[in-house]
Image (cartoon, rainbow, N blue to C red; front, side):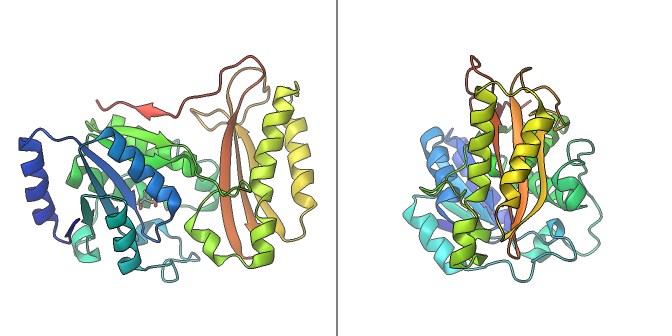
Length: 296
Ligand code: PAF
């Protein structure tokens, strides 16, 4: 595996690959890698000739009360994991190169950044959209991969790629889960043993939503009440939100019979904030395929 800190060196390497007509898959990360990230890498390896992973803990997507300085960092472990996974190139840019003195250009994806996480984490998606735009400009991949766990992030990236005429395809990869349903996340490392077992609440809630809509529950309000009741039974959980939303616009839906619905939740388990989501559909509707947006 090659590692690059300098943008110019990575560009020279990528130019060589393009001359050989190799396709490039790209997995942007903030490190603290786990099996979920590696499933994105596996998908990229299946689709593309060469796989590039970036690790950059992006300061501009953390709010003032968030865990930027405490975010888990272990570059040598991440290098071992990516190398074992067959990654071809690891990009480890420096803060100074990504945000040089005088930096003042931001990417703001206005509407889709507003609801859900946008309400609770103001400025978060502006930071995400800016860093992802920069990374896509640097790597110029054929396909860039993002996990479904942050569904709203995927929509933000899909939108910016379209709006800014980026040629890369933006591919969603299904969330990887532990056997008891907990979605893999770097933040799971903060959970105590007791909190870890309480954290299955999120996936239990999503399964209940899926089951109830199949059983014919059509009122989003009724279903939301049931889901909130399940959360209130767990003493370690503090609910931030559960929403039943249109999967394209993220606007709340009222009638679950009309098509695919995104059920999405943010819940604090102890001090750790976890998010998860699933697409649910009434009986007779095909289950959705992972979302993909072709480059334009
Ligand atoms: O999902 C993440 O890890 C980050 O938000 C991303 C896409 C790497 C941007 O910093």
